[in-house]
Structures are given as structure tokens and as C-alpha cells.
Length: 187
Image (cartoon, rainbow, N blue to C red; front, top):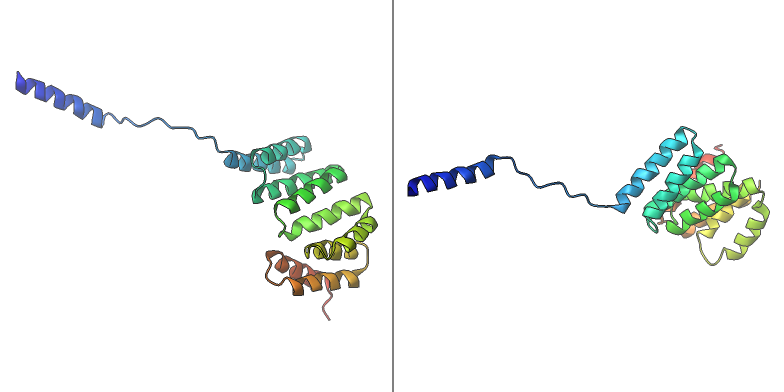
């Protein structure tokens, strides 16, 4: 009788081990991961010229993952979408938010200047950033781009070159240098 009980217990425990029991998957809500998914959905919608859906996806990505470096990308994508549909003031706000989130991406500055040009406010922004120039050296980037966009290439190139000399170690500086190489004619 004892021998049968031991065999039964052994068989039951073997059945448990070879039954393939696995723990059920646990779903973890990860807002950052979901924000990336919504950003990608927005990019796909933008490729399909579905601007309303793209705007909604980028807004959702921003809401899911606010105040990070990745959020700057989402704001920039939203701003580029607004530029395509002619909402230049909204685009300006998005590009400004991109720069607030991550100040070292040269593309964000270029896009901001494009939004100023689309609104025809380059002149007033030049005056504004000339006064702000000494407070933040990154304003020199905007000022240089504004000068160039306004047709004052010499002054813009000098301002951007001055920035590169003043801040040689910033990540944005390599982007500014590449931009300068592209606009300065080679002799």
C-alpha cells in the first residue's frame, strides 16, 4: 500500500513537471513604448497623406511620453505635419517645444526658421533674437539662420561661424558646420 502511494505521488509530481505549465504572460503598460508606437503610426499616416490621423498620433505620442528627448522628435514631427497643411503658427509652437525638450538638434532650429518664414515674421524675429543673443549662445544659431533666410548671407554665415568657434564641443556644432559647408560656395 505504501509502495502504491509513493508511485501515485511520483506519477502526479511527474505529470506536473512534464505538463508544460508556464506562467501566464503579464502585460505591462509602458507609456514610453506606446509613445514610440504612436509616433510610428503618425509617420505612416503622414506618408499616406492622412494629416488628421498623423496629427492625432503625434499628439498622443507627446501625451504618453512628455518631457523627454524623444518628445522633441514627436513635437518636430507634429510641427512638420502642421507645416504641410499650412498651420504655420501651430508648427512654430511645436518647433519651439522641440527646442525646449532638446536644444542640440540643428534640424529643429531650421524648421523653426521655416515656420517664421511661412508666417512672414523673419524681420521681427531677427530683432527679437538680436536682443536675446547674449543670454544664450544657441540663440546665435537661430539668428544666423534668420539672417540667411532674410538674404543677408554674409552676416548669417559670420554668426553661425562665431557660434561654432564659441561652442566647438556641443553636439549641434557639427550640424552647423555641415550646413555652412553646404551653403558656402567652394572656390
